[in-house]
Image 1 (cartoon, helix red, strand yellow):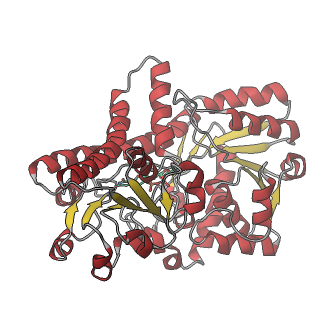
Image 2: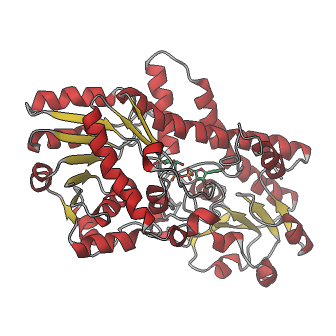
Image 3: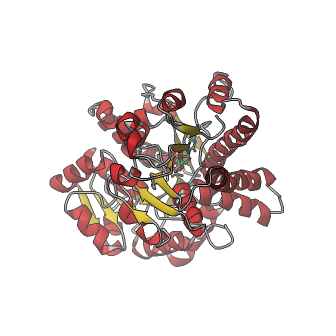
Amino acid sequence: MNTTIVGTGYVGLTTGALLACAGHKVYCLDIDKEKLDVIRSGRSYFYEPGLDTFVKEGIETGNLIPTDSYQDSIPNSEIAIISVGTPSKEDGSTDLSYIESAFDSIAQHMNENLIIVQKSTVPVGTGENMIQRVKEKSNKNFELVSCPEFLSEGTAVFDTLNIDRFVVGGKSDVAKKKVISLFKSIDDLAKETDLDQLSEFSSIYRNKVEKYIDKDFAERVISMDLESAEMVKVTANSFLAMKISFANSIARICDLTGADVTKVMEAVGEDERIGKSFLYAGLGWGGGCFPKDVSGLYQFAEQKGFDFGLLKQTQKVNAQQVRFASKKVEDIISQNNIEDPVVGILGLAFKPGTSDVRESQSIKLANKLAKQDYQVRVSDPQSIEESRGKLDPKISIYDKVEDLIYGVDILILGTDWPVYTNLDFEKYQDKFRNKYLIDGRNRWDKTKLKKLGFVYKGVGK
Ligand code: UGA
């Protein structure tokens, strides 16, 4: 099925490359020519494990066609998938300008009976507004299907091949069937793909319950109306963010009482009604999705006259996690009279497996500490370039962990990359000036580290 994907971000490029490898002709449309040039060379322009293999194959077979032209792509497509960004405005509400412009351009170039698939995360009611908007600009028949996306960065390819549910919302069953059949072809492709090769990051990333879905694709389809489908995504992300903030609040109590939040949550999560995932306490959540979706839903509710206080608190707890970690640093420094303190932070990406630093809690912490005139050093295996403009200029960036550690007083785990969670402390122990550790992701082995003479402070443990 000839398809155009508007927006080549994590969702657009992953979906486009996999559809191309499943045998469809896919126009990957973006306004950014530099990004298109990189894709044309057979690679992704962002770091996403496993993605390059599929982009390369798509380009080599000629099925994946990078383009900046609506005119060349939309009239030749039966389906147009919109996966453009929906960032937050200053007040936290959702900025729909990219969505509106995508719908306008599609309306200008579409032929009869195009199916428009809305994959970007939008406030409920956007789909209906866009239907009216397109109708004002075109007299051609079309259908809109809302198809929320649930992939996570760092495991995008794995998640898209190994999809756990496929939500389709809209009025036309015929259009929904066509969209389902398009995405079923990715499921067929998955059967020929060695998922173990791609699960490298999902298995190290604790929040992902390692699972391979063996239900038929049809059993995973959940069909509903447009508005409900639009609600599913923001509800899911807000709920997950709330779970983490809840665990972080329990961690605060554990800190005050000597209990260990990891043990508490492990036992609590055994209850199937609660589940184990997304209960890991730490520096808090970041990224391009949770922060904007939580604030977007909160603002949307407020506009409709509902005070969604639970979400406000979810955000507040998350912001406190950075202050809480910075307070631990201040306490260590003042209680031990450390002069000219040197603080190292390992990890800048908002989570492991990605180079994305949007709303990174590590970067917020680094900047907060730099403001207090501590010498702050940072490193990351993938996102140093992405971090440059976001870090306080006083912060020193290190390529090598051993150089960062040399002469450090306090070392903080900011992002739980395996290279940091498996750090060889025995090897590096003599390089520290003072041996204080703040485990911002509760991943280091407290008992072992204490034996090596480190002072360990986790988040609620
Ligand atoms: C999230 C959702 O998990 C996806 O289902 C969704 O499709 C995506 O947003 C989106 O809206 O596009 P993502 O932002 O890639 O995916 O990252 P997550 O794996 O959800 O992690 C988010 C943040 O929560 C990270 O900063 C992570 O470190 C933190 N986290 C996660 C915790 O602090 N504790 C946990 O237990 C889990």
